[in-house]
Image: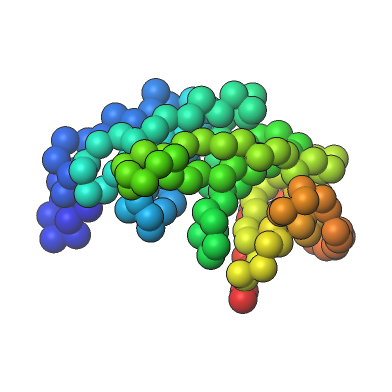
Length: 169
């Protein structure tokens, strides 16, 4: 967006029509330089910022009720977690499928399963291969993202509904 103009003026030109429903999150992937968006239409879109074109659109049917959050870590190999309205989160490895930097694949790795209530949020824990999720009961799950296993649960005793998870590293 051009902050000097009105919110309607987009530097990319016309508004992007990447999804059929509202976009709920957007993250940036450095190589190839693209933004990744998710939507309640259950799709994930990779958009090349240099070429100004869509690279790939994943039908993330693994999410039955839309996608609310994307989290990405690109320390070694890029890895992405998508969180919807379910009791699990999906793990992906978006990567280049050839030496061309404009091709991105969508490799689904598996699911982080074990929650008893809907997942509210999640974040990577520093540069380690660990990911934390929080569910509606204010229970935090710490996952070994490489093995898709829960290594610790922490019951937080809040008297209110959690709105998200903040990780300081």
